Amino acid sequence: MSFFNKMLASVGIGAVEVNTHLEKSSYYPGEDIRGVIHIRGGNVDQNVDRIYVKLMTEYTKEINDKKFYESYTIAKVKLSDSLIVKQGDKLEIPFEFPLPLETPLTLSRQPVWVHTGLDIEYAIDPKDRDFIEVTPHPYTSVVLDAVSELGFRFKMATCEHHPRLGRGVPFVQEIEFYPGPEYARRITELELIMHLEYDRLSVLVEIDRRGRGLSGWLERSFDMDESQCRMILEKSELKKGPAYVAEILKDLLDRQI
Image 1 (tube, helix red, strand yellow):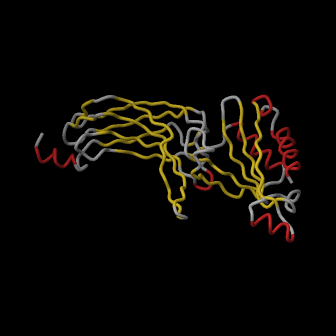
Image 2 (image 1 turned 45 degrees about the vertical axis):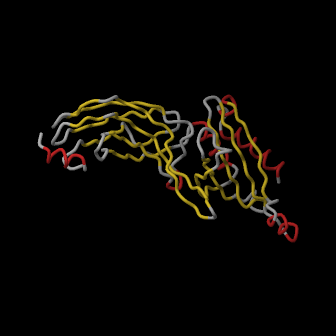
Image 3 (image 1 turned 180 degrees about the vertical axis):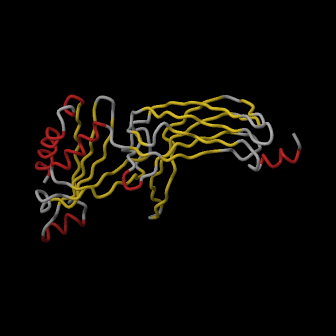
């Protein structure tokens, strides 16, 4: 084990390599993520302080009227304590953890990824990044289908910094919709923020009303054309399907506009 090889390994040349293989690439919140971390030893023995995986995403944060992207760790799982990866070793470390309920959907190119890292003192830490697709939980799917049944069309989704509304995370995912024919004259936009739990789904509904004439201009000027309300759907209600939930949402919208 030459001094030269040690120095090269400390800057990542001929060092330990890591590559994570996930069981699949698409998951929904609450589903288990399974995979195997493949570690290959480099040209020298290296002491690894710990091996971990993190589930990460990003959100936008506004500071002084400028928007910035912030990376955020939703979950972190430690997989090992200190170990020595010998020269030429080939190791496999399986892992499994549930995708947190707070994980945003990968709509509008929202990034979510599994970050694998090895902590090595006095060296560049080997790491790997695997992007995943996050699809709606069955509860969330019922609400999205209900919105579609009422004629609304998907517009965009964004993750915005909002520590007050975020539950356990400093952001919320806002899903926006264009109105269909039934609501086009009364609503310009429908926005949903969904908080998923194991036995219910809480939905914050924001409605942008379409104002007319002078009164409409005044409402827009003072943000009076927006209204918010909350819809809490129990597991038993969600099991009744999109048509049932669509009726609840329709009644809520009609009362607000």
